[in-house]
Length: 494
Image 1 (tube, rainbow, N blue to C red):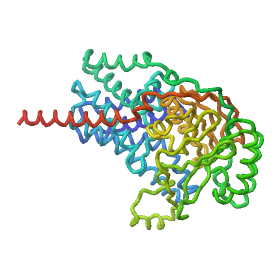
Image 2 (image 1 turned 45 degrees about the vertical axis):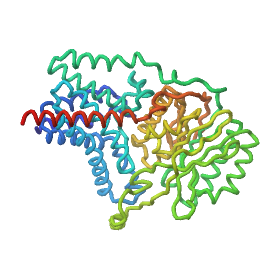
Image 3 (image 1 turned 135 degrees about the vertical axis):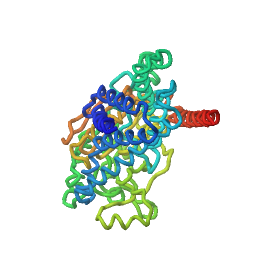
Image 4 (image 1 turned 120 degrees about the horizontal axis):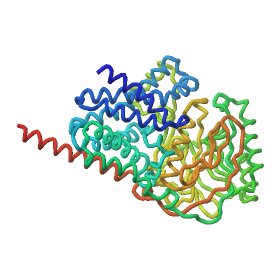
């Protein structure tokens, strides 16, 4: 058992190497096979333990960058930063561990249905992980395979559907070697591996809508430590005004999340009105991130507003847990005061907010962490011609967070077959094509303006029509069927 636990710990860390910036997806595939082998013929309790060990090392190595935001900007002591990373990784690891144990309880891995139950269990764990406590679906397995043919399934089933297929394939592969059931395991394995070759490219689900747009994405490269210093405010505001003036004439100019260190009421009638007038005269739509007080002026809303040749306001709906919102009951708040951990709960907007008109098309907006939720991006993007994400990954220095975030954004383009414009404060600022390919990007930690031609589209992918609902319903029905079959077996045994 100790050997199995050590193997799962190593495999969990190796699985992370399939994600950006490394993108060594074969290592993730090998790690998946290693976990399935370790789980083979194990009891329910041991399945839970091995799944937890795998998940803990996987999430610890994958989201270690939370340490930077909590220690350097959240005022936490270094030891507390380590504890918080471990606690978060432990909570995330509970999802695959518990779902795998539940699946093992209902159906042994050695049964003909074992590999399929494995795939369903992992899919369900990702769906739940993206829902409970505000949701944190980072490091979903399908992201690691975006540079393989499995990517094309994204436009049909989304990233969690890709994850389910991959874990089913891993289960079938191990069962095929150990049990030699060619019909029940070999054929499904072959179908999963070959099926992407029969699918159209994501961009085939949509068509061009009008002429390309001339876009400019501004990367101000403002370090988080400098962002809210009073002495830096005029310099930062002047920088974004100058770079915007240089880009006038473009159809669309995009600033990153909370680009300048002032709230919207502070800059609306002077600074932004001045920029907006020049942009309107040039026929340029400017979309920028800012902070807007709620109606009671008790909380801020992370927002995007449009000026110049567009108008609109988007209020962030999905906040970052333990960053923008602390999902803790009020009686636990004094604990944060004891450890001197800074926190602030932001307010949220509603679903179904209007799209931003841009020239002859419209843009669907998301802020930072929101592009992790593929089902929400798919629903909100219906009727749009392109996606725009504004973010600030400066919280995490030069860690792997920004490359991982870019990889996630690429999957959103695949799922919706739409170009995605990503404007980041310190990078990575990029233009992503409708097949998930990076068309252009600028180096991280440089002041830069990315100019590009982007083709808006019309139409919807299958995933945009049904989002994650088939996965939720399929997982629930499979659980009920397995539970019923288990009860029948027990009655017969009695």
